[in-house]
Image (tube, rainbow, N blue to C red; front, side):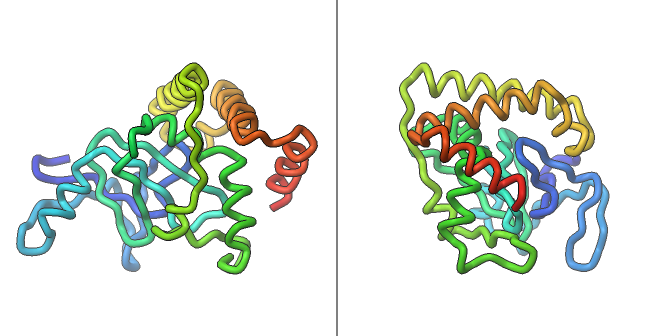
Length: 202
């Protein structure tokens, strides 16, 4: 990527903990590892600054919440959303909560009337603002952050989200985060089983 340019992603590029820009479909075109060059006549300075800062990018059309943390610059196309003010939360802690089974279940049920064809969720600024967050005890927060960091390290070793998601260490870490989040939100064991069964068949 050249100087004064930023990697470009669309909703389909974003998976849980993973981003893939090897093949990006945009405006009826298909691009390999696309990037956007800075042009002050086309791109507002405020948008360029937003793209240049760290953020959690969230896919806009998905069957489950798919969030990716970008420490580096990342330009987002229409249909992608981002959290860039973390409200005193560690962004990796937020990432773990966002990608948890509980949050997907919560969003599916809260916005039943806004589902698209095929069971897809229409994620936007309004729905993101209603995602439940919780302040965890420090040791619990640190545990989630450690697990998220472990997953993020693994994601850099793969060039395919499908292969990455089949990695045992990733599966186990995500399952552990799910269990911690269920505990944080005080979800009872029977309800946990119900949620997991529901999501597996969704």
